[in-house]
Image 1 (cartoon, each protein chain N blue to C red):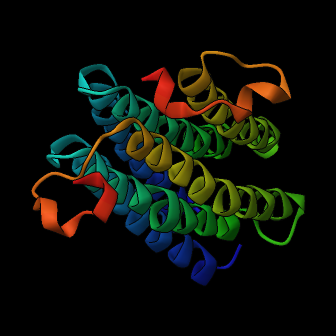
Image 2: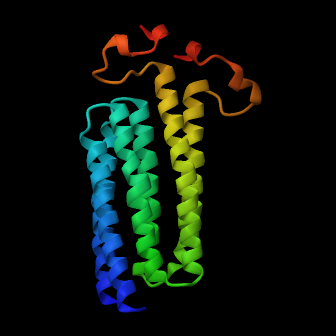
Image 3: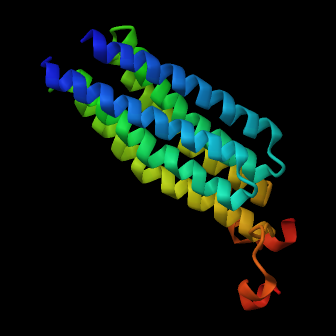
Length: 103
Length: 110
């Protein structure tokens, strides 16, 4: 048990380092899409971090929050992409415009 | 928890953390958006799956494992969708792969 929790703590430390590296790419990314990709990857690692911290704290109920975070991360990525392609988030008719005119 | 489950949990967590680190390092160091897309995929598939399976060994046969399976299935469904959306948006706007000669791109893109 102690061995597994020690490995979990080591994996959490590795996750924190990975989050730092991903944050560097999210800040320095040359294009918008690099940043969106980095933020999406950041959200995936945050899901892992919430689950691991829940196990470390002895309260695995945090997994509900991790599940919700995964859902919000996906919807948020798609919403950001839709906004930057069409400059509009609502209305079904906004999807029919050509993206080439919005460059 | 048996000793075998603890050992398996430790091994899966360590290997998963290594894959997450490899994916993040690739996201930082690779030269191009499309190659970074490839590196981010490692985190979402191998790293996340292995770490969640390690946590399933920690949780045992309880509701915790059911929630972990739900997280795993959800991310295995949504991560390729989000990645395809990002790549499609970048290609539509005009970002082209680094180092590909123009004759290898599709005909209308030359």
